[in-house]
Length: 133
Image (cartoon, rainbow, N blue to C red; front, side, top):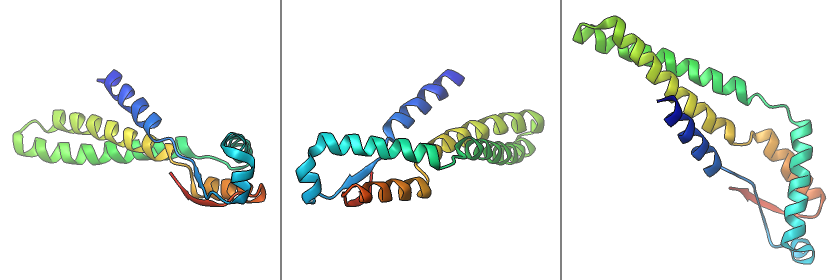
């Protein structure tokens, strides 16, 4: 079960790669796509250095909230079916796994501060950022 969740998490993370979308202004047309990718990478390195991240904390909170919610649901099911203790444990485990995956997905999305840093950095280099995908 743990291996399956790990594989799903990795697949979700690799499928959620995001980055700035540049408007094809005169500067982009002048420097070309290769230079634009290099400039994006430079801005990303700077953002990583200056923007503090709390992704691990967010994932842990999501896991804890999922475990608590799962325990409540499991307890309710157990009260009805007569196996309260077992159902609480199963519910907590399922909720924790769901919360962890949810937390990992959220952590893979750049924070608003990170995005703003990237946009400003790219604007200073002459690019126009029109969105994020």
